[in-house]
Image (cartoon, rainbow, N blue to C red; front, top):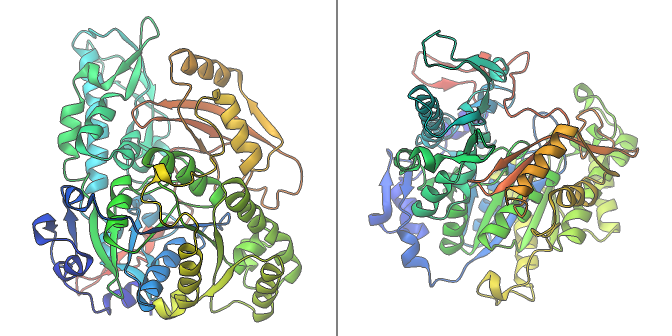
Length: 564
């Protein structure tokens, strides 16, 4: 059976039932049909005196193009915890239509470890990403309208881009304003994918509507004739944008195929944005369950680093346990096996590729100082000798590990890792701390007070294992201006390839010395971080040669097919 057939065959409970057993009163629920609902943020007032549950972060090694199953693993772990009697909840990101119609074809887990209704979640869901797209493009239209009617703010350079939630490389660089009308000024412009929009980051890092509105106003849309920043608030744009986001700021409640509650909210990519679900959703989940399972996008070098250095620092959170997901095929991929031959047995390449896993383990345990367990996401095609070698080598190095069969068995295939997570989390010497302030902090990779280049270098050398960092001359000038304008103390969000620790997607083994090449930096004053673009990474992805869209259809029964 395909994933969509498995999901359609599941016995889902009415969302009101899920809310009731989660502890969400009906007055805080806004239903979208039988299986989806939004949760009013007012519920947090009722929960503020309730102790937080444990936070489990799921991350991974550097993936293959199809990913390594972090979402599948997160869902399986939540179901596994429920199987052993723990009240668990998921806090995940919303899928972008870019990957749905691109390579992945869906992002709601797989097999018996899925969130549902999977077609709705993968497509328009409750309209959050559309609202973000519209708010982004409203700001763009207000900017150009202001220039058209006299440009009172003396805007000389516009840096704000339009967006669309699809992979469309043709929109990376475009010429706009070509109608020939009297007051329209043509310029070279471009689009981002919505999940890379600063508004997506703002939504995910704001904790209430007032903070959201303030951060929208802090967006820098360009620079005036004196080279001073012009803000969205100068255009009186933040109110209208906030109105468009009034429902999008509310987290979405759904369920797994085994009826474990899941809060899905926000969806920034981790290779070109900060890669985490919303702070609102995570904090809400921590109040509603004993265990909150969340994930950070792509490999731990991207998602986990940003989760810890950006999100945890902002939200005053700290994971009790970090799960690093690996697959046999990805380990061989990083050992030099071509992606078309990953199912073939190759013990030598597995050994080489395991260095990628050990680097991520080192980063989480030694750099960040967090408890770690490796989850081997088992495929039916995996070779037993390769699995046994991997498990034996990890145990020899005294690294906690679990073989997880969530795809095939659901929560029953994740009971072992659930029990190990509980053991790690509940034997924490800081377990009685009620808040971040009385708890031991994460060992952040850099201090905010350090200069921008120092922060970038620390990420590059400590996390990516690079020798150093190289900059273009134009990038150095931009860094100097950001610091001169008073924004040098913001955290760093590096945009780079997810396929390698380096900034070269073809450098999979990372055997030789390498530098990280920063070709541009972009200030995100509203979101509260600085984006550094490494290598050839693009903020508008393109479709593959054979996009998943070619296989997605609706049949004569009015059923969606092809999403997986």
